[in-house]
Image (cartoon, rainbow, N blue to C red; front, side, top):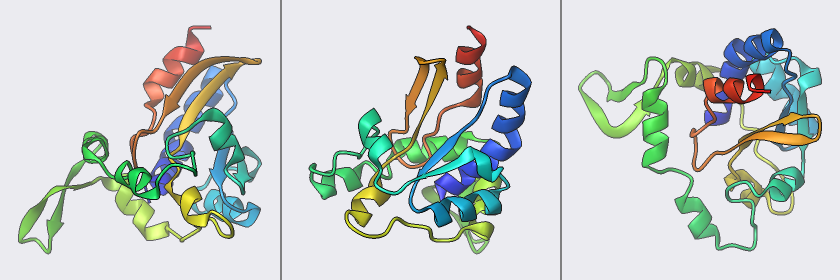
Length: 175
């Protein structure tokens, strides 16, 4: 679900900011070409900016969190939801505790407007085939390049701990 939240933010915030800065945004997700197409349609990203990596090969080459399929799955699963996840979701615009039917807030469980919108459009597009669960556990990240030189890198440490747009823009604008 956090990937869908990020997709909405990429469309609304990142893409216009990158276009203004003269930076090209490319989105690579683990899964099939059809999944990438569905994702881009649902969140409103242009399909020519969205690519599929069926084997998670690019994620493994970069060394993103949980991309080592030889590591114990339980250890990788433990990194999925951490306090950093709650802090990240809570720290975004309109971050707030999840409320249980108006009766009380659920401790350590947070939501925000983008996450709520993501829930409405979400479609399960999990990877299939060999290593499907391993691929599902992989966390994303952001890389920025000037030509072939990497100028910025962020590895999501757990679910929803995405790069911050202002930090990425600062890196690309420092060139």
